[in-house]
Length: 252
Image (tube, rainbow, N blue to C red; front, side, top):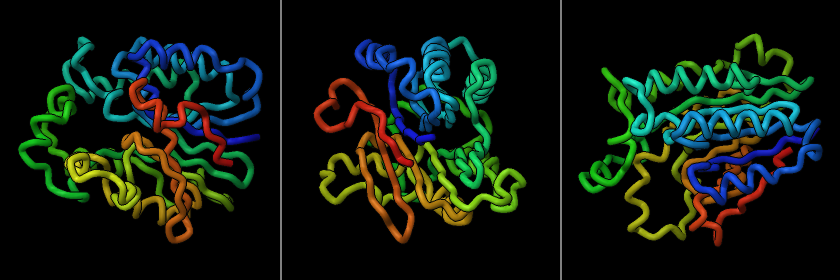
């Protein structure tokens, strides 16, 4: 068994959908795929992806990204209803959103959002960031929404983790802002406040994770910090093909 990872498929783009359909039918039948969010804001495309991938992999594990929870192109009252619809689609297609065990290996999906622990959102970001227009979370600001998601994540005492000797975690959102490389220009650092939350870092460390896969930033990385290897393998937009891998990455 091998473990592969990818995020940010953004299947709204035809070129990305074509790549997905070209994945071989029999190369990964014994393997696990970590799908770290931002598949599509359209439920039909999300379900197509689930159907395509579960036919190719032994197990597909998923956490929703922010794009997956947009409601601007769906007839849904809010993003909580969209989350329910996304989770219903995972159940229908046999996609896992819980802890996955393979003997002494445990793979743990971690839900998240952003709570401005990476910096405050300024007026430019509030005007430019599409989540503010395309998501609707009644009764919640970003901090309480992050708590809503992260409080659902397994604790080290979870029965599903007992006996595990190796832990892999994955999330859509970044667990620490220093995963962004120094080369990022100042003008692009304006989005740092909406990249993730330090809560995820505390949780993955508490679980004893040795590998953490994440997405969202579209900046691919493979770096080890204080004993944890962090991997971002974003597929990204067609316009980003010159710096994203646009292929599956084997992480174990």
